[in-house]
Image (cartoon, rainbow, N blue to C red):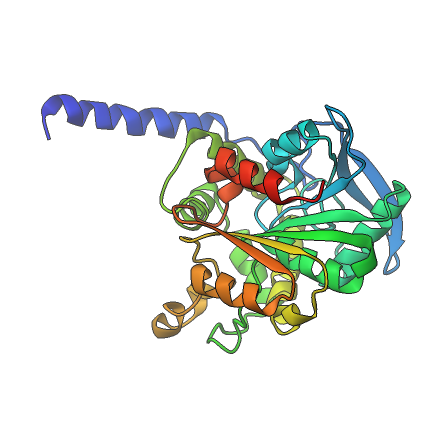
Length: 334
């Protein structure tokens, strides 16, 4: 490499490091200080002897309304705001878009004691939608949100017009494939150590298939900022409770019971598996093979169609937004 290009490389690294350091804000336990693209409303309700509030955005159609609502469910490392690009596309196409932050995440309540189940989160979401006068909707979930969408569809088939699953986790049984049980206390200690560097490295590898764009950094800092803030302990504790929920509450064995039309959208280079890093190397190599998992899931789900993005990782809606949204709109109910 010539001296000129060496200097350019050093400058690029320096600029990136400077940009990251400038963006390192500390946010409150309910993501106070981080702005969302639309007004944030709060749905207040009682659950498990807790008074809770569930943050959500309610985005009206920006063109002729088609009378349909899409509910966007975020993943474990994302928030409702991360759906901004998709929500704008859907709104422009005539859909009403509701984007909640689940309890335990982002701008919603983080109770000290809560029995997290996918059934409970689905019920919370159903109550939110009913409070808005929405009795049937397209349920679209990414990652852990895909796992929640499956549970929602299983519980409320008459209220679910269509399922859209974007790289959903839960398409395999991690326990049977060698992922050890960690327990809440070990997950808590693990989460207390979370940093933006760790989040960025993980997301670059799995979410974006080794690629990185400057616009991804906002979402890294969104999450990392809560772990730098004054409420990092309660953030980490709720995260630990949620990881325990994900590990212990499989939807894998119920895929054949889904009755709604289901669109499965998957990045071929996705390798996500909960607890994969804690598995033995031989077991780890067998986990998170999304092209195989997605094809098997599409065969088991009775009314499923599958779209695979050959060059995408765990978040094709962000890595290849134009292609993703074009296909999405062509396959959504209208």
